[in-house]
Amino acid sequence: MKKDIKTPIPAAIVDRVLEEYQIKDLGKATIREIVGIVNDIEEQSGKKFIRMEMGVPGLEPSKVGTEAEIAALKRGVAADYPMLDGVKELKIETSRFVKAFMDLDIDPKGCIPTVGSMQGSYANFLVAGELDPKKDTILFIDPGFPVQKQQLKVLGYKYESFDAYHYRGEKLREKLESYFREGNISTVVYSNPNNPTWICLNEEELQIIGELATKYDVLVFEDLAYFAMDFRKDLSRPFEAPYQASVGKYTDNYVVFLSSSKSFSYAGQRTAVVCVSDKVFNRYYPNLEKRFGLGVYGKVLVGRVLYSLSSGTSHSSQYALAAIFKAASDGKYNFLDEVKVYGERAHEMKELFVKNGFQIVYDRDQEEPLADGFYFTIGYPGCSGGELLERLLYYGISAIALNNTGSELEGLRACVSQTGKERFGELKERLEAFHAHFAYVDVSKC
Ligand SMILES: Cc1ncc(COP(=O)(O)O)c(C=O)c1O
Picture 1 (cartoon, rainbow, N blue to C red):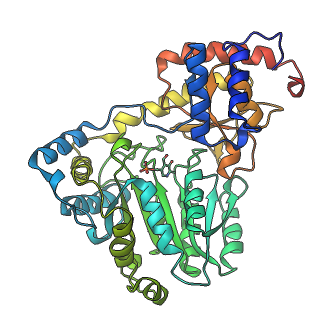
Picture 2 (picture 1 turned 30 degrees about the vertical axis):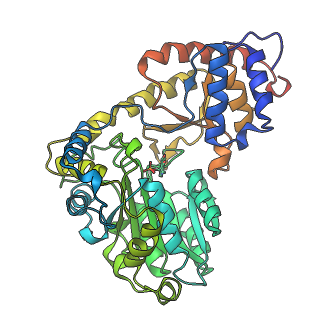
């Protein structure tokens, strides 16, 4: 940073903390490293950042959930081991919820609680990698959630990925088929709405994924961590269109991950549900039998993998989720009313960034403007993601670089969850200061 520029956060403090962390390119830092850097700068400077690096819910947890969970604890469920495949109420209510909000028919048997969607994806990756020795690779439609790739590294599984930015609409077919044709892909993975870009794959694209998954016998892992949060449509009415879009309409080869963390602000209880299609749940794979002594996907997932990982999911929080799903399906609880504030924040925050010389990196869903939601992406002319992130630290703004997410584009992911409207004035001032300093200089010389 140029010495003569006065920045909202004293440059000496930012320089010192960056020096301590010894990270040459912030574009390669993990989210938790950025969190550490920002914590240290805040502590040393006494100044609060506009924190946009971590996707934590910034709202109160769903009351329907906490009340049901407290009642379950008072009944004494904490003393008992829950069944591995989940409590009956949750299984039944999940099946009803996916019918109500996705128009999918999934047997309660295949609706299984996991310790967050993180455990759901880990456990299903583990099984998917053992289905067929020829299919030893998992494919990500990126940009994506970096921790899932870390899970594959822990498992020692291979993966490939491509950036969806260049392959929207019909172009997706050829690209996907070029991978599937090789015969080594067991599973294709994406999140919808997407973390980090908030692009939403549409019905046409989901149909392409579904058709090809059936044709090449590939599993689809559909990660709905931001369930129904495409606020362009009203997805809040149970048993009525429009529904949360899903590949389940176009293939039987799917597993859906329902997280409670964002849509119900229930991240702390680490409870999610994985919904395995009836066909996949009951399917027999000779290679699974060889490896685990059991050949049916659902049985291996529950009786071998989830048993080994955590022997079930917290008993009381399963009742929380069951109550949330029930109230939503009964039309008594509009969970989207509680979280749509994220979309409102994103709308205003994007405007502030754009007015100050930034671009929205992923800005469209084909012809449609992108929805406003939990995340958005920003770039600044002449800056790589890592450079931009470093510069913004001096202005009291933090985010993560897109590099880590499988994006081929330069820029940052900004999360709106920790920035309430009361901080927009400060954000505006800081962005104006940033733009005033950088708009007319050759940034590469700063
Ligand atoms: C795409 C995606 N998948 C999964 C998760 C993790 O969900 P959970 O908190 O239920 O483990 C997240 C959380 O940020 C996410 O963004």
